[in-house]
Length: 209
Image (cartoon, rainbow, N blue to C red; front, top):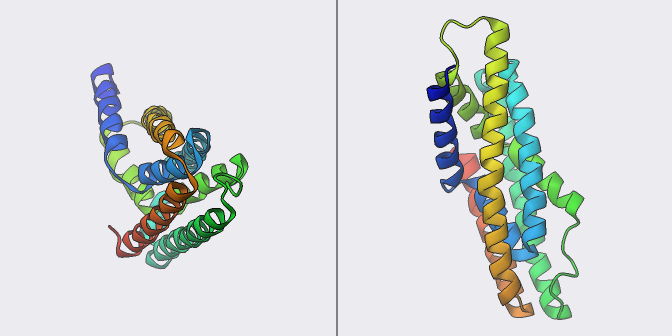
């Protein structure tokens, strides 16, 4: 893998991270409802998930999942169920906070938000397929097993860095705006909007969108 190929990968990774998708919409929703720090905790979780996805792709585990229809569907359904769970939590949180007249009293802990990011990423089968389809295009043709794994790991780390920059910027931007506008009424609307977004993402996961 030469420098020109690597730089092409960097640019492509940044563009892909910017494209609307479940992960960056998830960061946007959490940052808007809970603040920039909470959004960054989700980003850290998503990056941790990408570590798992990179290792799975490099070791061939992702290929096994993709080639096993029932296992692929199981991962997809788990991811959709988790999104529905988040939707229910967001909807209930909006009602309770509005009645209590508080803004962030029921906000999840940083550890809980980190776990959400991890689960969101590792239960998204589209990320696995993406790694299998996208990364090999930048691996040196004819490379032996060790070189292929090494280059896959390098590409994975690079993709994580690009994701961290883009998603981190989204978290800071959305969080800063939300901090200025946050009132009990606005908080309730944001939580309700997040709940609807999670349901739509769950439907998209099941449909394979």
